[in-house]
Image (tube, rainbow, N blue to C red):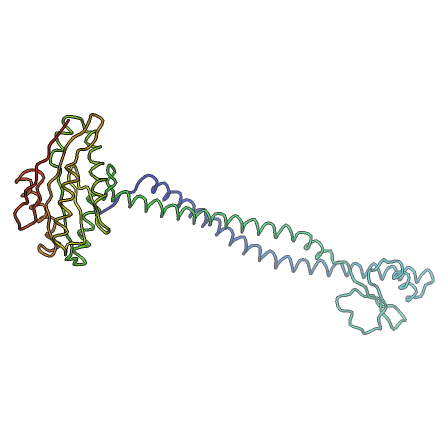
Length: 342
């Protein structure tokens, strides 16, 4: 049986689909951005290395030109190197023996000397790349936060959708007037009894005896009040595990798992007749309604014929007069008829 969904579920479905699409776009964009970023980083590293190397070559050329200029002025190559070292022009400058591995230092050979001038060159590319690192991290963090926020929202919508569906499912199986189980829930319970072979089940079909006169005399609003009070009285008598349902109009049913104790079920039915015989209060005064009950036991009829047998018993009870109780296969038990008082 197909089940219609309410506006809340349809709205949550639309929102969930929208958020899922947005998440896919954002995640896809994030993945693409990370791939592009990785490619750009690799290219940046190569560019940084090239800029640093070119900058170091330029520094070496300037240092060599300065030394040659001072040599022209009468300085020896080593004295000229000391002038550059003492002037702080070349950071970390020192004289190293010729043939020493300078590592990543810039060097200038000194003519006629067995030493070389080495210093730490300025790495312009690396400095520039490092200066924009916080911006790169901020951008990636922002995208991660955005994606996390959308994923959190999608999860929240999913939970809301599940809750809405649970509410819709519960409402679809509840009678809106009385809050009892409705015919759908009742039929599902019967199907479960049949499926699981629950032989110790009793079904009590209840029909109000004088409900139509209440509707005719006082209107449907008063009738609804009576039905709500009937539901409350039935729930007050119901035992643990019983399913109390309104099947429609003034028809009610109780599925009891205590069908193995037949005397207890009969006493149960008598208690229901007694409590429904008591007057019901409406705005216009009080009315007497009463009820008749048909009982069937799954052990006698089988689960598949349980409802039909209880209906036949109820019909027999109604034919015998008001306030009657009939068990499938047995004669109705006479009961005092109900009275209607306006």
